[in-house]
Amino acid sequence: MSVDANAAARPTGKVGRRRLLFVAGAVLAAAAAAAAALYLSGIFRPYMFAGDVIAGSAPAPSLAPLVYENGEPVDIEARRGEVVLVYFGYTRCPDICPTTLSAAARGLELAGDPAAGVTLVMVTVDPERDTREAVGEYVRLFDERFRGAWGTEDQVRSVAGAYGVTFGPGESDETGAYWVNHSPQLMAIDREGVLRVVYPVGVDPTELASDLRELLG
Image (cartoon, rainbow, N blue to C red; front, side, top):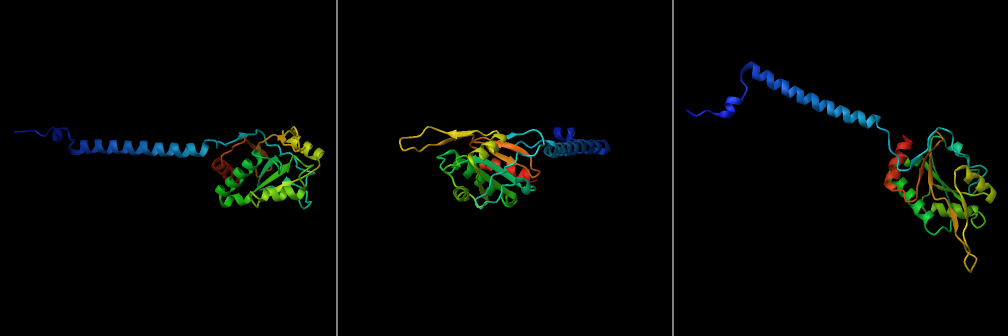
């Protein structure tokens, strides 16, 4: 007479059923614990921004006494509750400025509806050649929400210094034309008016979009 080895190993009776229930319960408990751990890690793990996070909670430096193209004072305090991106550039910039502004515009687009609460202000570092109107027209080529800011060279230099930005003219060519060397970082001010993140050249629009959603809460 042949014996079914599997049948011989198969638990039978009340003891066997208890063993099966115990194993099943242990498996379910382990799965629940793993799911809880994943959930909690998502809650308590700090968000990782694409740029350098600025420590502290001091208000971002003022942009006064700069003005927009219509002469309105640039008052970032009045934009509490929104996210403000600040960039120092100029309209004749051959590469870095248009690249950064394009990335910012794409980031806002990818962020979707929440990005309605985001503004970008570009401060010209070439006030001798950039007029107020020219700066405003230039940044709106990238996104209608962007604003251009202008001031005298002394005013711009004072504001730029507060943000750790430096700038100065490069060598002139035979026609007298010149580029302006300037710090290229893009900066984000959060809804509480705190300078939170500094982005290097080449920030990825997808990562920027994620950061904007995080800053907007």
